[in-house]
Length: 292
Image (tube, rainbow, N blue to C red; front, side, top):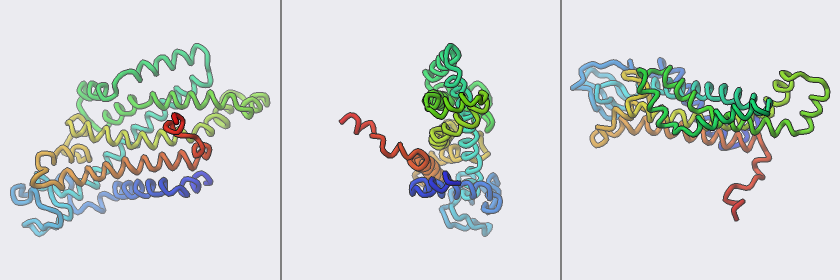
C-alpha cells in the first residue's frame, strides 16, 4: 500500500496510470460503449468514409466516422483496445516470467550455471528482434495467441540480464548474509529477501515493455503479420486507413493517437516508478552528467 501511495504521489506516474486506466476501462466496457457491431457492414457505398459526427442514410449516428467498409470507427477503436492492450500486457507477462526465472536462477546459482544461462541470453539477444519477429510470424498463420507468444519469447533477454544483476548485487548486501546465517533455506531466501527487493527494476522494465509491445503489435499488424482482420486492433486499423489519408484521415489518425497515448503513458509510469519506488535513483547522475 505504501508503494502504491508513493507511486501515485509522482505526478508523471499518476498521469500515466490515469491514461492507462481510462484505456483499460474503455476496453473492458467495449460492448457497452460501442454503438454498433465493430465488424458490421451495411450499405458500404452509402456508409463508407463518413466523417466524424455524421449520420448515415439509415439514421445511425457515427461519432468518429466510418472506415472504407462503412464500419463504425468508435466501435472498432474500443474493441481494438481490447486486443492491443491484451497483447501488450500478456506478452510482457510472458517476458517477465521467463526473464525473471532465468535471471534469478543465474544470479543466485552463480558458477557454470550462470555462465551457461547468460551465454544463451546473450546469443538470443544478439539476434535482431524485428527480423526474428518477422521470421516467426511468417512461418505460422497470424493470430492473437501467436503474436503474444512471439512478442513474449523475444522480449525476455533484457529482463533476464537486469534481474541477474540485481540479484547478484543483493547477494552482497549484509541482510542476505544475516538471513543465510539464520539458517533460511534457498526458497525462503529467494521468496522473502531477493525477489521483493528486485521488484522495482522489474516493474520499471515491465511498464516500458508494455508500451514497446503495443508498438510492435501495431507495426506487425500494419504489415499484415499481426492480428488478422476483421478483428480490430489499432495496428490493422492504421493499416486500413493508410490508403485514405487524403480524403479520410481520421481512419488512421485516431488509432495512431491511441497508440501514442498508450506508449507515452507506459513511459510516464516507468519513469515515475523508478523515482518513486527507488529514491536513490533520483540522486544518480544521468549518463550526460557523468560525461561532463
